[in-house]
Length: 364
Image 1: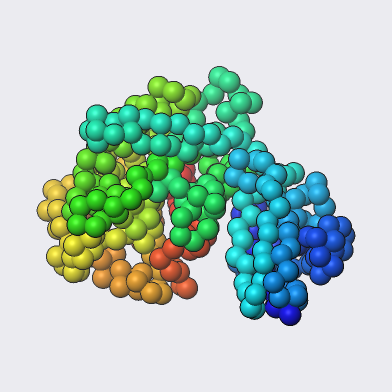
Image 2: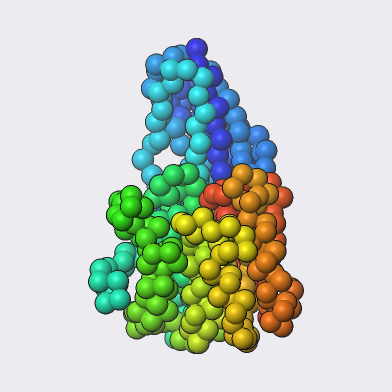
């Protein structure tokens, strides 16, 4: 027999609600949700274990106890049955994008051609429920770099975990914290290029093509979205966000283009960049320190963890906070720099931090 452990990351809303695994074997209730495997809530995941004959393939689905409350994918569709064949003791990691009875809004795809980058960039665009309900209304926009990781766990290439950006916006809107918001995820090219660097790194790094990408985001991307969707076309209604090199590029994009963006969210910001600049020798922070004044009426949220590589980011963020204060920005009003206890460099942490970040940059 093989012991199979399920670890299910639930949707953002009411994450502690009971979750069940139902499937085509007796340990999972033989497709009867009422007899399914009930998982235990061990924040931030639901866990449970069954024993299965070694080598026996089984199918399963994730529900909240009934077919009316089963999992749907990032597009709102009921997915095909998941399946697994155990040979040894195993763990199944699974992120549930949303529930059938709660899914709202519309995720779609788009593509924008860039003269600056001499290539196209694919986009994921999420429209809030109010977009269809209120045809005369215009909406703020959250621009997220690394768009593969922000809506759909199946397109998040390494972790299988997404940021739940649509879920966070829907939940925070319902709570009255933020207005209904369009979310745009910018996808980066796949593969490798110069010096074996990934094309994503070449897109975002300030050591390579990051300034060009920043200019594309501020001019061509924003212009395209404003022309195609009912946006609020002003800086106060635009947020730019990213993590790692995406966080670095998001920060630089706001500093270089303050007439376009007024808010930025930067997680686990890689100030060392691809050249691995040491604290005190980071060109981005040196340039910021040499800037006479910072743009007014901005709000920036920086978060990084205290585990793994993120632990090394503390000196960079301390320097960043000092520069902000010297230039007249006020903690808790214009910016926030937070080291997250237990945080790591990955989507699992960034997903948890997004709600607090949105609350801060959107506070009135």
